[in-house]
Amino acid sequence: MELFTTYPTAKRNFFLFFLVLLLLILSGIFNIFQPFIVLLFSFFLVFIALLLLFFFGEKKQIAPVAGSQISTEANENGFRLIADQIPFMVWRSDADGKCIYVNKKWIEFTGLSYEGSLGFGFVKSMAIPENQRRRQEWWKMIKDHQPYELKFQLKDQRGDLRWVLAQANAYYIGTEFRGYIGSIIDITEQESSTIAIQEMSDRKDEFLSIASHELKTPLTSIKALFQLIERNIAPDHQVFRFLDRANNNILKLETLINDLLDVSKINAGKLSYDYSEFAFHEMLNDAILNMQHIAPDYQFVLRKSDPVIFIGDKFRLEQVIFNFLSNAIKYSPDCKEIIINSEVLNGNIIVSVQDFGIGIKKENLTKIFNRYYRVDNTIMKFEGLGLGLFISSEIIKRHHGSFWIESEFGEGATFYFILPLTNQHKHAQVITDEFSYYEDETIKIQILGDKDRMDANWTGYQNFKSVQDGCLIMLDLVKKNPCTKILNDNSEVRGNWSEASDWVSAECIPALAAAGITHVAWIYSPSIFSQLAAEKSVDLSDHIVIRFFNDKVSAADWLDSI
Ligand code: ADP
Image (cartoon, rainbow, N blue to C red; front, side, top):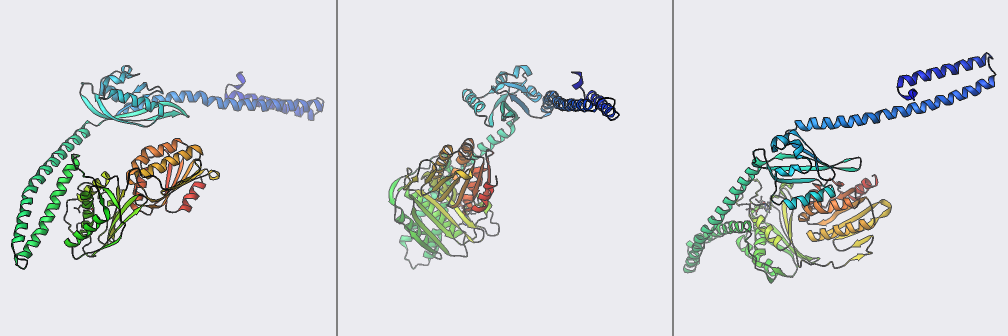
C-alpha cells in the first residue's frame, strides 16, 4: 500500500485522519449528527489511527534491514579496500576450507592471479615438505575451528622459495562458522638469521667439546703428578701447604672442565647414565662429608635424612648435590650455615639445600636453570660458568624428577629437587564415589551443584604425572556434572609443577573449556616457583576467564558474583 511506503506520506495521512476526527467531534458538539453515532465513528477512527501507527512502526523497522544488506556489501568492499592496503598477505576461506579471497599483496608476492588463487588454487604456490600431513591438519582445524599457525615455504613470483608464517582464526556470523581469515608474512630474513645463529651455536658447542677434551688430558696428568709429589714429601714439609692450595685449584679447574664436557654431551644427547640400586641417604651423607672437607669453615646441618634405596645414577645424583652444596657455599660468603633435608613423602624423595646468602630476585628464579645463565651480581664477583644448575636439571629430569627454588632476595635461597621412587607410582589412598567426589594424597575434587562449580584442592608436592592425573579426573567429573566454574585451590601446594604448565595450557584448559567451563578462580600456592608455573599455564589461554587470588574467600566471592 502506498500509505506505508514513506515517512512523509504516512505523516500526511495521519494528519488527514485526525482532521476528519476533529470535524466529527465538532459536528457532534454542534449537534449536526446524533452524538452517539459521532462517538462510535470517533472510536472507529482512533482504532484506524492506532493500526496505522502499528504499521508505520513496522515500516520503520523494515527499512534498516534493506539497509543492512547494503551495509554488508559496503562492509565487504571496505574490508577488501583495507585488506588491499595491508603490507602483508591476507586471505579468507569458506566453511569448507576453500579460499574465497586473497588480497593484492598475495597476488604481487606469488604471481598467481586472483581467480587462480581461489578454491584450492593457492596450493600451487606452496612448497610444504610434508604436504599430506599439513593438509590433514588443515581439515582437522576446519572441523575444530581452532586458531591456526604454520611456518612453511612459499614460492614467490620468480619461483624462489621464501619462508612465511601463516596465522588465522575462525570467523563467525552470529554463531555460524563461516571459515577462516588469516595473514601470511614473509619471515625469510628472520629465518636466515635464526639458522645462522644456530650454525654459530653448533660451532661454539663443537669448539667447547674439543677444547674441554683437550684440556682434560693434561689436567689428568698434572693431577697424577701432584699426587705423586704429595706421597713423596713429608706432611710437615713447607711445600705441603702449597700443594694443598694447588690441589684446591686443580679441583676447581677439573669441575669447570667436567661441566663443559657434560654440556657438550647433553647438547649432543650423549650424556650417559649408569643406573644401579644404592642407598640414597648414604650417598647424601658422603657428599656432605666431602663438602665439609673442602669447605671446613661452613657448618652443614643434616636435619633429616630418611633411609631409602633408590635406583638411579649414583655418580650423577651426587653431582647434583655437590652442585647445590657448592652454590650454597659460593653464594653465602657471610653466613656459614647450610641446612640439608631429605625426606620420603608419597613415593618421592624430596631433597632441599638451604643457605642464608645473597638470595635470588623473583625475576631470575626460573632463568637460572638455563644454560650459561648467571645472575648479574656486579657488586660481588662470583666465579662460574652458569652451567652447574643446567646440568643438574638435566640429570634430575632424566630421573623423572623436578626441581625448584624458594628465595627472598638478600635472605638466602632453598634449592629443592624431587625424585619419584617409581614412575608408575600408584595413589596410596583414593576415596571417590566415581561421580562427584574424588580424593587422593595430591588432590581433592568435589562438585558443588548449587553453586554451579567444581572445587579442586591440590595438596603437597606435585609433578607432571600428579598434575596430569588430577586434571583428567577434574575433566571426568565436569563431564558427569556439567558446571561452568572452577575454584582451583593451590594454597597447599608445595614445590612446583613447572614441567606440567605447557601441558595444562595446551591440553587441559582447552578440554575444560570444551566441557563447558567458562570461569576459573585460581588461588596461588605460597611457593613463588609454583606461582610462576601457574601464570605460565594460563599464558596462552583465551578459552576461559582465569583470575588469580591469594585467598579462598575472595576467589569464591568472585565466582559467586558471576
Ligand atoms: P654458576 O654458579 O657457575 O654461575 P650455576 O648454574 O650453578 O652456575 O648457577 C647459575 C646462577 O644461579 C648463578 O650464577 C647464581 O647467580 C645463581 N645461584 C645459584 N645458586 C645460588 C644460591 N645458592 N644463591 C644465590 N644465587 C644462586
